[in-house]
Image (cartoon, rainbow, N blue to C red; front, side, top):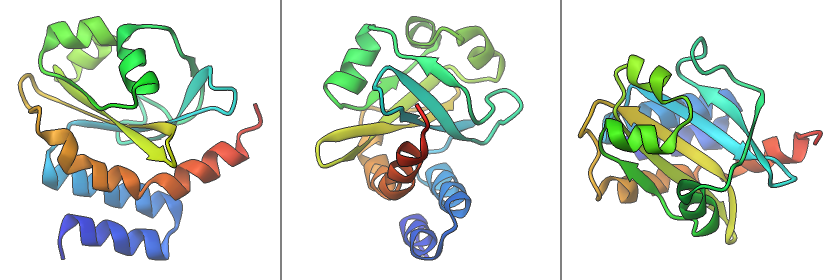
Length: 161
């Protein structure tokens, strides 16, 4: 069974955590990653919340992060386009917690928008060693992000704020 077929099977049978684990495993097989997280945009549109992490000690599930107006956010949230960072400089430019990210051996990243009906629901985030990701990698990830629409809509609907 291909990674995408495994993820589709998880979507059909659930539960949500099994879907997240299947997508994480699929992404590991298709493009690779050290750190994998999922964040949804809260209903107020002014913050994001982590709903899955393969490194829960360093990046725990829960808690909100305010959305700040940066060039990165304009691309992801405004233009709804994937972003690829290739090196430590890109990580420093993009993430306030770049020191923790680099300490985990991650010096490249991809943020893949999870979209539904033109609406940005959140992002699928993959990080790995310097130079790991290529400009062509987001296209390989987008079918997996599409499988996350249901769980993202559920999380947003359940969000109290």
